[in-house]
Image (cartoon, rainbow, N blue to C red; front, side, top):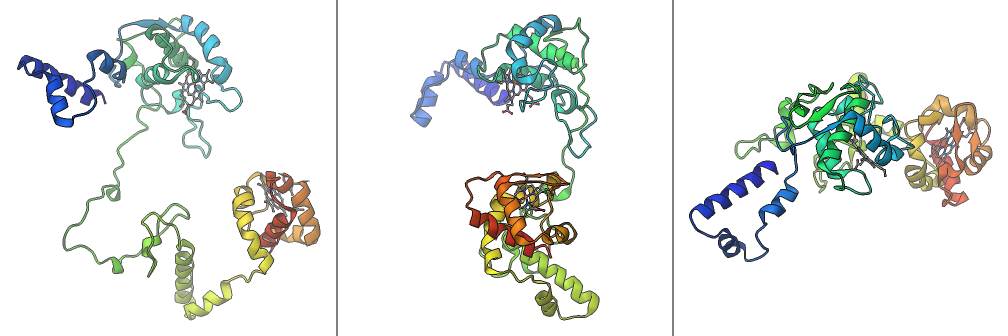
Length: 343
Ligand code: HEC
Ligand code: HEC
């Protein structure tokens, strides 16, 4: 936006110099709207570049920021930026980006301090965006940097020194160098699509619909992914054992009862969040070992546990998985599906 607005301004200045009224050009060309005034453009042109360009003149201290932060921000972001309840955490987390559950904060994640000024001025406090003065924004930016131990308590942030604040993750972003992200369209003598194969897919992420024979699926469709994976598994198996791939397909398919089939949809909608991956100590769908001792209790006990809730050795199963809107029958069907698909 920065550049294009500057260009618009430039054009209007050139226009004025040639004594051609800019408004005349605009209305002639599009015949609608009105030309933005310089004041209106200034109201939108508030983005700040990493080198500090776009910053308004001014300054603000950590000390003043502390007072303001406690008044305007701490109810949500916590006194130390730790985040109240589920509001965003603003400080800490440095070094966690390579962990399985990274804590992404201004300090651990953001590459430039300029974004902080820009963000606070544009969007915070959440309930009253654009209500802060430029000075207040300097103070609050300074204070959030202080909470992240990036500046000292006596630091005064100014339009001149903001770009010199080094963020820990400044080198963590790069332009994706993989050749396949550069999608150059082939216009002639292209590869034959029927000779292309998929080497690997991520379930629910890699679109494969257009590779399924005879399918008229949009490019983003994941439909047929299971078929594709199954086919590949069978092909591998056939290659190993010399078996006919078709035969392998038959022996691998689990036959589900009608009740279990009816429960699949409920499972997908209400139970999969936990039982699909086995989070929070839940037995994972298809994990034979995890299910065997449970199944021994008898189906009716499992159904009762699923309906009424159950606290066992590994975690807490909420009543109906937290979906009290489900009928007992729907839960029962889902349990049947889980049990049959896990043996
Ligand atoms: C009513 C709760 C609330 C208050 C008060 C509030 N914020 Fe926020 N803040 C949020 C929410 C919600 C988000 C995330 C918004 C989003 O992602 O769209 C956020 C995001 C942020 C972020 C970006 C965090 C990130 O890592 O993406 C910063 C920085 C921030 N707030 C600073 C402030 C400052 C400074 C104040 C005080 C002037 C403030 N906030 C007041 C709710 C609040
Ligand atoms: C929020 C996560 C969560 C959701 C959602 C959830 N479960 Fe569970 N479920 C658990 C956990 C955790 C356990 C293991 C409890 C234990 O044994 O300690 C469990 C156990 C079970 C068991 C085995 C009970 C036993 O006696 O061993 C059944 C059956 C079950 N869930 C069915 C369901 C059904 C049906 C749904 C969807 C309607 C569902 N669950 C949704 C977390 C969940």
